[in-house]
Image (cartoon, rainbow, N blue to C red; front, side):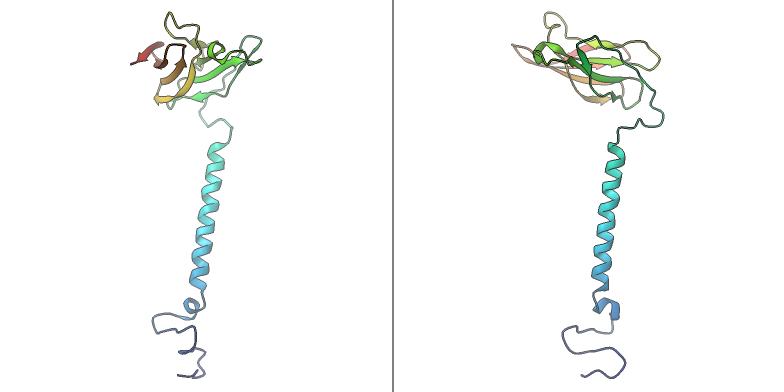
Length: 164
């Protein structure tokens, strides 16, 4: 069938039927979907950048940490309940990481920090921050010449429990 003068062609490469209008036949729907997909990607990336920013979250108390000279403190990792935070202290000169890295825990309103140390006879070995298991419960890891150790540290009880 030829064009009847109404602007709609029923023949040729863009065969349109009565269920579709001109914009569908012209590819506008595909373009709209591409634009929506692009905007979704932009929104996702913007939210990732916002959550990865190093600015403190609202309600996060300001903490100042003083470490011994020759040591450096890593970035704070806040417990999900924001009652305590953990960080890694390490030797500035990079001496043996087996014995010179340890986890420190701070609480808002409390001066100083506590070092998370393994029980004897392994107290001289480094502890490494793994993750928060739950609010106020920190998982730490240690490597000794004899074994790999995992432990839980509770901010409320201030006790370290080795995980078998």
